[in-house]
Length: 381
Ligand code: SOE
Image (cartoon, rainbow, N blue to C red; front, side, top):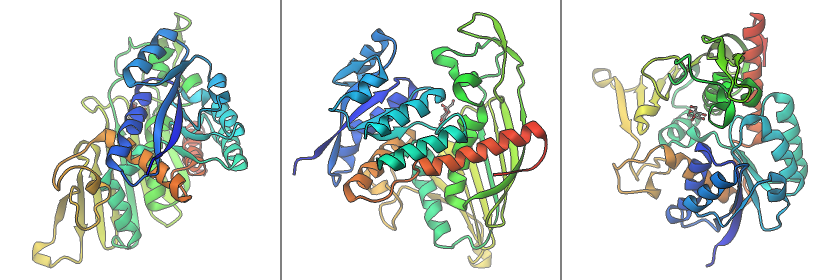
């Protein structure tokens, strides 16, 4: 049966533009049951040479230099937003009003107020929407969700997560511009809180439910950096590091830390969950492995199991789509999985998560974290 086209209009062509496009290109080869095929219709960006080079390399059919023109095109079904965070709201709201489906890069917005307006727009228009919190779709993380939902951990006491990097230690690194907008609060909204902790929060809300309140500290280690646009040294207004504690609604305690100043760590996302009956541990650098301690194991053999989530039997999520049992996949596959799940939700008219509403909750936690760090007290989410 011929697949129905899902015409994609991509806005932005940076690192995330590549990860998403790779997902669109590979999905049907590995998920043959899907009824739609993403078609790379157009990519949009301000620099005509760069956008054309991207289109040529990734085989987009056409280019646009104005996202409004892209949204106005009747041959586009879905808008994929890969621009800096300060343009997500405007583009998403316009896309929803034009009846387009939307796939938005994380974090949803600059703040919850923008996020609310984005949710209202997609819900009013009734358009399919998702936010690219891709780590949910690492097979081992998805399997952690299955185990928790089956009650294998029992009552949860602790949730711990870190996201550590070291790429901004150099004081000479400028802020702003196309490459370094993540260091400019005007474009990014915040530093590690919205960029990295948002991933940890998204996974945590999914695995362990809502967060009630938070207490946080943030630090900006390099106080001034050259701004690419003004050519002058400007105050740095993002958080370079952030740590927070929280109470989850289920009574468990949370501890989260993120920094771009952890020398030696490039992108280390780790999480650990301790329940009454069992514990789970996961590490992005060894992403197939789910470590699992089950207190009901026979005493002599009780200990941490190291499960390589790469089997096709026993419902290990996503793995039967790829190679033969035991062989590995990686970071880029999480985006293929997200595209597959998005298309499947369209094919079957089922809910897709994380959607804008889910991502708004993450945004609200980020806001409470930043606010708590500012005022130095606990903040309700
Ligand atoms: C920042 O370095 C970054 O690229 C984030 O923006 C991504 O969301 C994260 O997955 C990896 O790190």
